[in-house]
Length: 441
Image 1 (cartoon, rainbow, N blue to C red):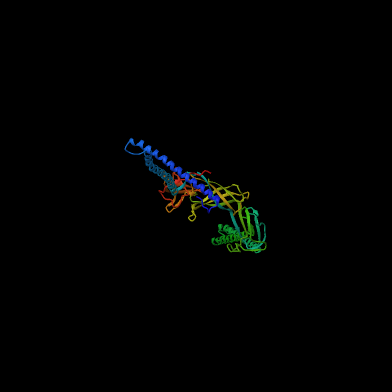
Image 2 (cartoon, rainbow, N blue to C red; image 1 turned 135 degrees about the horizontal axis):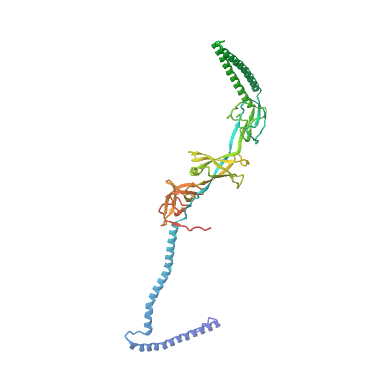
């Protein structure tokens, strides 16, 4: 059948397709007709074997239908296990990680033996062995000065000269009075001796002889007074020459030629102290240091000591412990110790800053710990140790010598303790801790 409305080419192709469909349907019908006798024959041959009235294909299909639910169940279980097991492992790992993070990780140190000899470094100021402010003992005008600042002088050397003409005149007058008194005494003595001789022959009365002897003694006293006055004025005149009391260095000159100076000056008055010169003895220097109470018992005259100064890097300046006060200052809790330094070469100057290195030796050294391991609690200095069960235990200890970054622990620790380094303030006894592996650098 063709549609006259279609183009000739398309109508021809449509007819061919229709013929093909008819032939295909006919082939299918023939195949079905041939298959039906075959199924009938198979049914006839199978019927005598039993009363089940089932074919071989039906018997094989039933067990397969029973296995399918089992296979599906197994597959579902396998898929379920494949999804749950990793989750369980991940959950367990997360639990372990959480527990590990919640457990405090600490670093431990083992106490070591404290050194028997350690160097105690203390700051100090260098002072002269002796120093003096020199004042005038005689009033007058300064005639001239012989030494200026920085001059090294010896004991008795003249530093300056004072002019006091009125004092010189007084001395001359006193010496004249002394001569008069001497003459009067000599006459009185001669007279007394004569009267004593006449008394032996009964030429004079005893009363007159005693009078002459008394007059002689009075003249003797007047002569002694005149001699004392001369000595006094002579001493004042000797002070016109200002001399050095000891060997040293002049560190100040506060007077110039022509200046009026007064005996004794006015010490302590600002700007008008009356001090003419200031002298310091620098051949030997004194260095005073304050030793902490914990180290005070170990500092003796036999303790080794040397000085170091910033201006001499690497140089050890020999010194010796001279003496100490023998008592602790209640304010600073320190012992004042004097160290003497031989300074003949003038390497150190008075007033300079220096550091004293004391070689302190302990009779019975204890244990040594870093300062970072200490905890300062209300009941005293405390350290935290790890016991055999991995728990923290707080112990109160007694601190001995201070080595700077380390301290000596005298009581409260044993050498086998594992001490926690840098413990937190919140650490408490019984807390479980984990010891971190030692870092290797």
